[in-house]
Image (cartoon, rainbow, N blue to C red; front, side, top):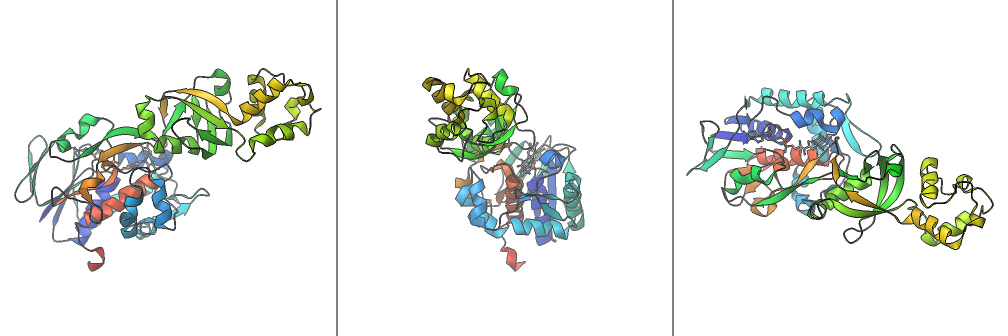
Length: 402
Ligand SMILES: Cc1cc2nc3c(=O)[nH]c(=O)nc-3n(C[C@H](O)[C@H](O)[C@H](O)COP(=O)(O)OP(=O)(O)OC[C@H]3O[C@@H](n4cnc5c(N)ncnc54)[C@H](O)[C@@H]3O)c2cc1C
């Protein structure tokens, strides 16, 4: 039997290693269009590679996938976080967990992961073919003929792991086969806000509640003010969950921030009134970062040296609103350099998620970000690549049988 895996990224390598391990008698080929496979692994997590996320239960893990969600239950039950940790351990890579649950190699260097994956393909004898871009798949009876510049031959089974594609046109070769594709849009990005006074607060990290009126519910978490707008976990989470809605709005929408997520709105004025005779600049009762506190006061046209007791009713209302309903116009997005992914791709409707096999073409399997699966930031996207790669590479065999 000849098996072809197309795409030398995280999912493709994982699938190839598993396939050759489970079926040592097969010839397993891994085709990669560039001469630099695993390029994303190399740059991932700021060069440290956030391999996975410490999530004890599958029921918890699936909550981090805006696309995929509950449907990934069987995928992660077959190969989950603990399996990933063990897999890398067996290849000599220990993972460590950071306080927010993200897991990295203890070396803090993505090279450890790349070396482990290369060792994996070499140990089992996968034939890695670089510089071959597969442009056409011709289904045969049986098997699939692959074409790059010339025919690469006929393969009995095929695993597609070509990753997320920014452009709709890049899925055309799959659409031509009748594979259903959800249109791609970016996920995991930060919000552009052109407000020089806000931008001047760059570097401030604080807790907040963020809402996109008319689109989202309130999300609570860490916000980072940048020189171009807003970033931080809560913003990235919104960008992922609302990837499609925000694309429809062409990334032009309003965002509402409550800088006091732990305080009821009707408590704001009474709390400020407790120190009514203090200068406002010294009345930071909410313990906001000082620069942010000063900015919010001045942005409502109140002098820092004024006291709560002397403010007009309207000024009091304005300050209270600035603290709890600060509104900005977002115009555009910026790619989050640490991690960005594609929302959309091969529809899960046509796939048996127990095997990752196409329901349309028996013998054709899918893995990784090519699928309409994506997670929020934190190691979830690689986890999906490892899990789907492992299952696809098993070619429908019950793993425990092997
Ligand atoms: C900057 C950055 C940082 C990231 N950091 C993290 C992180 O720390 N943690 C995390 O969980 N996720 C992270 N991600 C997301 C993660 O990298 C991806 O979800 C993951 O790499 C997907 O793996 P994949 O194998 O499906 O696709 P890819 O890694 O994109 O690999 C696909 C491969 O297929 C090849 N290919 C494509 N078309 C063809 C073709 N026609 N013929 C032959 N070869 C082809 C490509 O050249 C590529 O090598 C990051 C993403 C980026 C962009």
